[in-house]
Image (tube, rainbow, N blue to C red; front, top):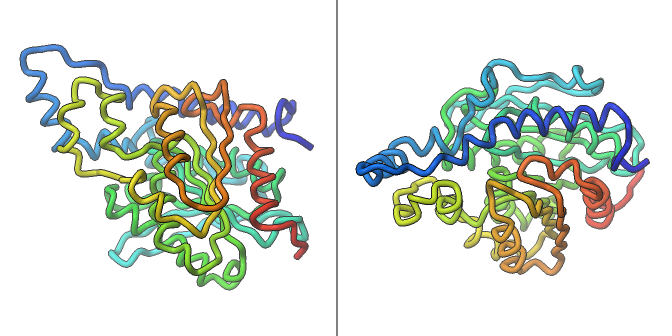
Length: 316
């Protein structure tokens, strides 16, 4: 059954997620600063406060302590995990199993979320990936988000992503699974870095990118227009535009909300043009904004077709 337009708990849960995340999206769109001290203010913000701006892990309120659990969304077969990193942090994660014997039950989606909220806020998306597409889903919480320890930054989150992949590769249940890396917004930049470094092993069979950016420096002019001449002060770079062309072994699906008010859709289009992998697919979502693209008709159908093509419909 197609998820598009279905009058079911799936749609209701997704709408709740979109509403929650949209309520904090304005955090990324700072008002233009107009004063004689604008340069000093922007310089301070960009250099000393950029981690707080880029990684608002406390948004929405209580996001560091109130993490919805899979059981709240009718998900029964799951594990709540704590995974250690090599630098001493402890990362919260959910591993959610697909129905046994399903068409994609030997495929696991490694899911990286955007820069606000926590993994619990994305459970309605995971629920559809499990029930409609039939994949297992592994949801990692970055350091400094949700119940994970530490403070977020580019170096640390990059290590967190590698920790998640290594965990799946070493876990008996998933060591032989085909893996698909799926990133939304900031999670897209995380995913690009991870896949570029791990594509040779052959277990990553697909990469899904939704509403992500060329680089953090490229994004600043649209988020903070007065700061367009100060982008070099940004030390959280996430240089996807230079890394993505190195991915040559993994098919990529690009999901672009054309009404995105945070990341200009031109960023996604340019990433698509820069991709050198033999298989790249473009899916425009005409009414989708930064957080509502998951509600657009064809969103999950496109993912389902992509998964079938890259992972196959194998019975366990």
